[in-house]
Length: 105
Image 1 (tube, helix red, strand yellow):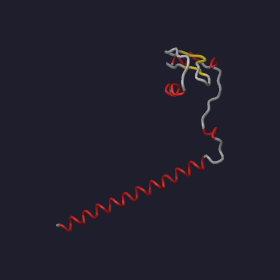
Image 2 (cartoon, rainbow, N blue to C red):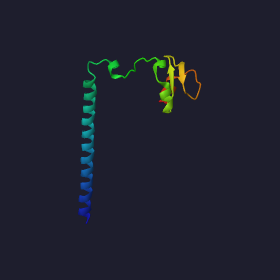
Image 3 (cartoon, rainbow, N blue to C red):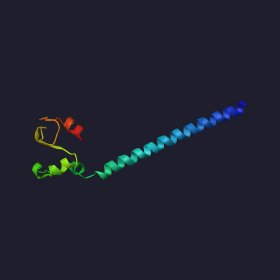
Image 4 (cartoon, helix red, strand yellow):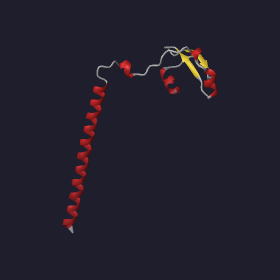
């Protein structure tokens, strides 16, 4: 009985090492694939081409009535976070930080 118990423990230990080794190898391969993708997919590109930038729109040209009908609202801020125009917004805040603007999304 003692021999069977030792064989069972050896098999469990052997299978544990096999699992751990395969887990490490698969993660290293995944890391190499991701790093290669990031390096070669962005090679020669300007960072501005990777970051979405909205086009400048005149706030008066937007259909704010239609936005209000579906329950939307909007604010127009300048580069410093000062509110230029506000449409159907509940609070009358005059200035936003970058963090507050991100939290609005």
